[in-house]
Length: 301
Image 1: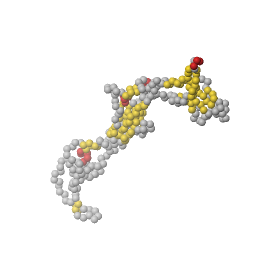
Image 2: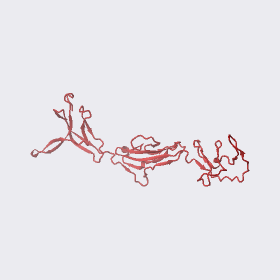
Image 3: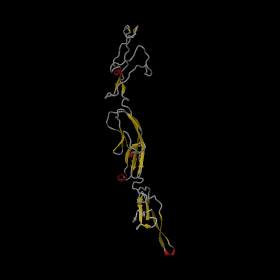
Image 4: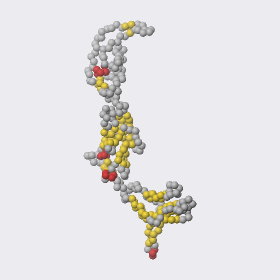
């Protein structure tokens, strides 16, 4: 359809007609047209205030049986004159080949559940990513050559790009970092798989604990022998400005206490021992002795 004078006689409206055959009494049948206002599958519209009119077809009809609309025709007017397209046309969309092609795998021998959140991943020096799950067995896909699922990691809104250490390898293998020194998380993500028919989502969280967690261990060393009766040493006179009287004399009787009883499994030395202290037997309360104390000398306690 076109106009010879778009400036003075622009097309003001276009619409669709649908033709059908009806009974015509003694004369048999005849063709009649009526306005076709159902815009579910096909419509005509303008986006630039009448400068051009476009015909649109719905391409994502996704129900069994497809759709078939026959004998449509265009009709346009400039307010004074009405013209119709020379030919009628049909609209047909076939059934989506991937419709209902995906189902949950319920085979007892092979099925898996959606991966559970991992909120206490131990720190590891391994640069390999921690394998969480291969969820190709989460779904069954019919006609995988054309209806295969494509999966990705998104933010928890299932649409935006995430800032996360969770990833997918080879489309199906869910994995996460395990050697992030400072720890991370919880990273909250949405795993989404989709094909030509539908999409499927589930949420997954991962948290890796700080590398200094679970690094200290007891050597199982037997208790240090009691010192018994320590040799008496006379208290010395106190020194310093304003000092008077005698002050307690301290004697070291156990060097490097920590390394005698404990180990710090920390090869890169970035989780140093920051404190050692004396406790009452049972280690639930601080020791209250005024005669025994723990002190640090250089890197030793």
